[in-house]
Length: 250
Image (cartoon, one colour):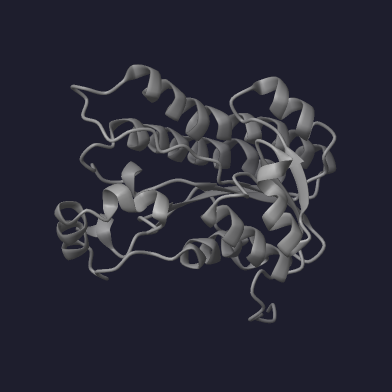
């Protein structure tokens, strides 16, 4: 019988983990927790200037590439030895109905949130298979993929596609000892999200419908991401874990 461990991020010490969207709030929180667990973190974003703050704070290694362009992803990831990946790069797009959505915006949301994550998985998994040591991938999805939210036709669709990438990735890569999971967060109230979610006509009914009746924090999203990367989750793959205060169980 194995000996239980209570170490946060068990088994991550010395392992190299790539985090995309590392300059953002959730991405930054994930980087901090991984560094605290002893991981060798590669903090990725579109440019190194945007990564400067989290790199200076944590000592993570910066890596600049654009998930919208395959050549950029390939050039950054080919030859990079990895144990783990967190796909956290994302784009919210617009608040629109199917009747008035801007298809150009829809295309870009899907291009970043789904296609971009697939490109990272495509090239990162080649490294993981080549090394033959297994590994773990966590895709940061959204509650908008699990339930219908008004105005979220683009964002919800992109994240539903990402959930399927998670499931198929788990199926295809499991034979190489690589686990692929997702987390589906509710809203983290930041200045960027407050313009919509902070409106009384939106916030009040939404929180009333949520069993926990409050917004999530960045650390509350980062914690399960690190758990899913760790050896404590060694038998978990293909899961889309709702981190949404119970909203999707309604």
